[in-house]
Image 1: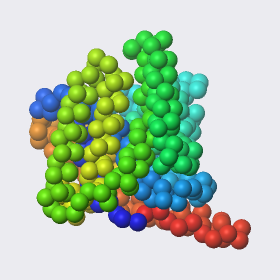
Image 2 (image 1 turned 180 degrees about the vertical axis):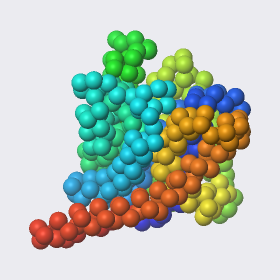
Image 3 (image 1 turned 135 degrees about the vertical axis):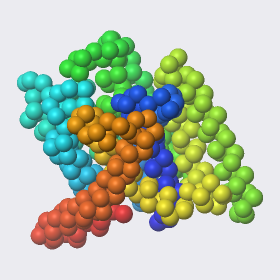
Length: 377
């Protein structure tokens, strides 16, 4: 299997956009421009996930569901557990930056149970989906998308049109359901985006777009002529198309959100196909080892940054040095701390715990007389 290093690097830029978006909203940094383009960073991860899983499993046409889900769980859960516990330890209860819990089904233990089992995004209530470490809703959604992968995979090289249509229809239906609810509500009540933002079924379409993008890439990559000129021309043309379509999507974001979403996902698919084909200057720059490394730790950066931001908001008044920092200086401090935390998490939590979990799953299989599961890389 070809290791698509440039796509790994792209993960870092998407994670950095999420960091910028949250830094602007939480600290009111005026030097970070306001743009709806930040909203397309998280969908990029879902589109990329569909593409990468097809690259890993698409040639076989089928997978063993149990082995597949164990590998994916081992990939996501350790870092999620670590930063959920970090949020519980570091953040206060209540307040603008603290942990928000309610009563009854929104109480501490039901919410924690949903969160640690990666089921919290299935709840349309924000008090569940954004619980503890708010960004982890996307990890819960990602885990549910993995359940759809074995359903979407069979025959996708031929039947992709109706699968795209079916998943798009699902997104349209859930968006329509949202029209029956108010645009804004408390975290305990439903609003217009309750079933179309964090809710996993609303994200199947972009995941499917990523899978189909791989189908196109698989049939196209050998047809692009060799040579620096041809590969550069292909990448440049695709990048121009990506920029134009994403700008149109940005224009329609508040006018026709559904249109903007479809355009953005298609633009991201074009970007993935062109960069994965390789051979041009853009893909070569993205293959630079330091950028690839940043992409490798981007999952930890994504999970860590908001907990760190909320912690800084909570304790800033108690530390004179933090009180003196403002604007660019404060943002650089936040980003550096988040990056350092990501490196530590990647090397001490993600990798080792993933191997431990896979060994545990393999040990159980050995007891049953079946071969161990290979660690997915």
